[in-house]
Length: 587
Image: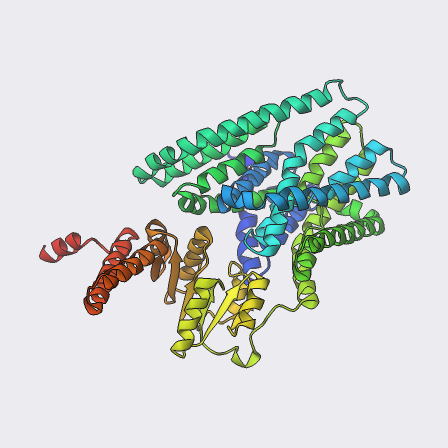
């Protein structure tokens, strides 16, 4: 009929997803609950095993349900790619090199020990053959990159430990799937040879990406920046991400490897801050699509029919992985609180578990009934991961209490110093000298303990999480001082603080003048470049020592500092150049 309204299934799914995001994000933010749980619950509700089961009796429900989860798979995969790209932006090659011992030490031990013990258990008590037991054991050994890292971040001790293990797991996805194919009853004789060819060709592609990206990306983004077109900048970013992902996937490697490399390469350029800002909404929405697909895979009727077995399997898996991971971290020198929190957080299975189970099922290594049971356990495990994160923090506090501020000072308005290193402590010394209250906030418990032993007012917390600053009274704080040597995190925190507290005095340490200009654009009241201050101090020392009078030297230093500060504010867009201001007044 001409008047009948028709809508393509893709458009209908898009409306459901966007509508879900519009409900989940503000509602869960209102109650300070991670939207991860909300997206998964939405997936359960709108999926074929939720409201989709009632469509035949209630046809109108087709407009608020997604009947075919497979249509969302490409978008969910893209969400994982963007997530790994964002992780790469937060890292650098230098930092990644510093993590090499954790990645290939802790990461390999965690995967091999959990996978091996699980395989031995399934082989001994479930009657599985060796190949099936190995496939299931190593599938369950994976932890969720998509959910764990947004919760833990990459800056805190827990985040660094989780990142190290997850990076190794991501590296091992392809070899494990190839090995399963080689061990399968239907495997071709060239399975091992295919693995070798993939690793060789993949290694060559990675080398090409590193070499070409090092020289081409700065020029590409420089040209995009000159156009002053956000659309072109976004297009250039998507070109790099998708191109790198396709290059690695064409050789048989996971596309997330290419996405991670693209992020690392862009992180080495001066445009990483702009790229991170422009990609943030896309990453969040794409990750939401992935979480919705996880929720849609949960068959509530099947869960209810096997409730006892499912709960027993899930609890047993969570406890086992938490104990093994926590023990390994403690043996490698981590604090008890860090080991406990990381162990609990990493306990749930992963989206990669679903991939490995699907590959093992298609290769006839695991029977369909067993795979479906563990797919349900995995989906439920992913659903409770945010709750595990909260449980891990509670256990960590019970095991080793984090330093807290005295209760009687909780209402005192004070300056919050983010970062308890040498710069943060120097700021604290000056605050003390002038009788100004302060508190140091840092996510490194060792650094906090040392600061408290030396008489500083310090407390443990992650500034990237809003509850830490709220607990310290940021609403009434006269100022916030950012002293950490983390350019990306500093810029992100400045933007967040300025958005939430428009009148707050925000003073931030900057790595150089370019970084200072970025901080001013993000909303900093003052940004102090390290290079500028060291140059001024060197000039003061040499001028005084060669005989110039102290008074004129100090006056000239102050004049030069003000001159640089005005220039940085102009570069940051806070002021107009003097000529423009003059011409305006004269006109």
